[in-house]
Image 1: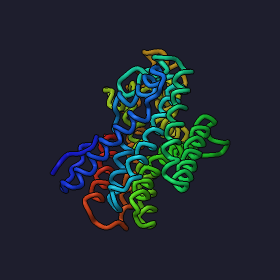
Image 2: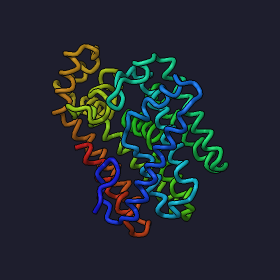
Image 3: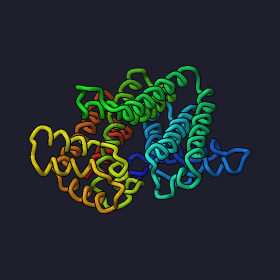
Length: 336
């Protein structure tokens, strides 16, 4: 039994372990190559987050999904590079929108070089992803374009907020389906597609990726509140400080509206105050960490992870499938 990937996954089959490791190594080389520019400053900015590391969650999914076809097919590694470049580009943009100071344990690009450079570097990565994508065929371009539309739509919906009468929790889960689920689904879809897997398998893995992606983000929401460490690669409570209502906060507000308890209402009032103040921010984190809303958010995370696991049922039994199931468990473990 061998441990592979960023989540400590146990892989019994040595051939699978070798394929995945070789694929991820090739992706890393592809990311560095894709982020080179004739302008040294652009190379430095574009490689800032590549060199900071990261889980490479999406490339890992590409490699595992490719096991249901030919994992050595020429489009597998480039498609994983495309997905990770797209993800990295969104991080540059997200950090500007969220005014984040830290990403993956290093100063965010906007902190280091300013918002304009961060936004333009994200655009540069999108351009490089598109260049690679063009060689993968029109179907791959269409899949990526649809996912990118969903991703941007999710971001816009998050910024706009729910329409009058719309349940904020439902709205937020829809946002996550666009912002996170869409690209994770594409990772699974590309791996299966590029390997020549059967269309039914492509569909199953796409559905799995969508649900796993939402579970992964919900786990991040919980971790952002619950963790005292920098386990998420961001400063704990970043979304809270910026006034972004993630699922634990939405579950709190839902409970406050339903029950009208004084302590819930008081905590909501604290969250509505200026949380750039360190004392208020620390108090809000402390109270949320012991609130039932956080446990409800954990249960929501488990529900999506279980839906992802259930989606895999039609696939043949193999070590790649077992590893995908383990990823569901890993996501739940991250949420505590």
